Image (cartoon, rainbow, N blue to C red; front, side, top):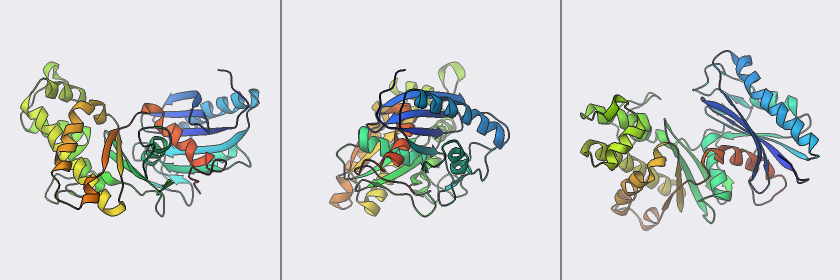
Length: 320
């Protein structure tokens, strides 16, 4: 793909299924992209799978005469932005992996920024997607787990170590089901895709064709199956509780929801909006707009670049 002369950021999106790298313009356009499956194995095996497409993109930028601003990294948690170390729960080979230092070795003298994957999704939507025009935004990813990120008055909320925004671990029912984090009744234990499917199976739902997953559950709900519809209502109520807590804490005015469960937006939207409309709380907690994410699989890359291009574009936030 031919590149113009405008500066670009190297963006990385690190997940348990795939590793993605891209050259992203200051306008959020993904100009060139490379992906690779996330391999099993030790730290160096995973790094080799990521560094190969990174080197390829750096060569592409050089050949095209592009000025490189540096690198932005969106990663699954947990992490410590103070040291640039990540330990994604879904990448067993990386425990305490010094991602910013290793990427920095490929970009000597240039800045490297690190942020959570859900926060980067929120940044992308805030600047280039459904979140445009909002003042304070919560981005939520409702998928295998539930992640979140806050953009408050245009600036990302990182927290002390970069792990702020884990709204999936808001406890919405202390007597609820156990969560993988060790607590009971977290939103993730109720509203994530696997949690919805598990609950529906416990209530007697059986998918046609024998594959019990979120796609089958959504199809059953659209066909009017009572248990499947109840699973979406239960998930929607949990998400609505997260929204009201987030609104009380940060006075957000918009929530953007992405992820696999949000692909069934026709089912999830009313399940979230109805309990929000009935919430008896303060007016500012009920004025929150809830919208679907629009940037899809590129949101992590676009948001990772936004961590970096703030150095050149004052309206965009700057990482460490």
